[in-house]
Length: 90
Image (cartoon, rainbow, N blue to C red; front, side):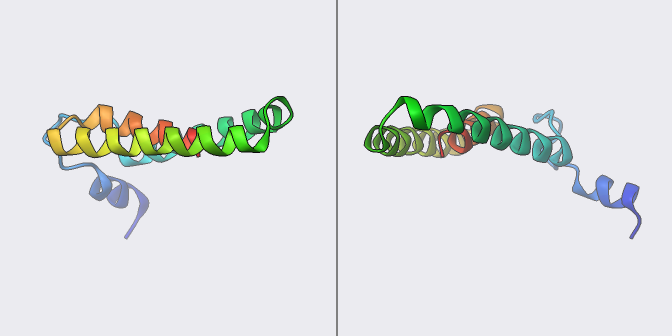
């Protein structure tokens, strides 16, 4: 299978309600992961380990609940943003 056909097959079958293709979504997830990794180098010296640990887990819990609620309610873009924020808080 050649690349254009593969990308065409990977297009989301949401009926046009979700404007981001899987390829662009992967780029956005990678970008969020990279930005969070760079920011984590600076927050380690500013805050203590316990503060980062507890705040990170509280934020991950909140964003995971928000993603679950948004996914069950049909808010696709809000769910995607919640996943990105979960990755950043991880």
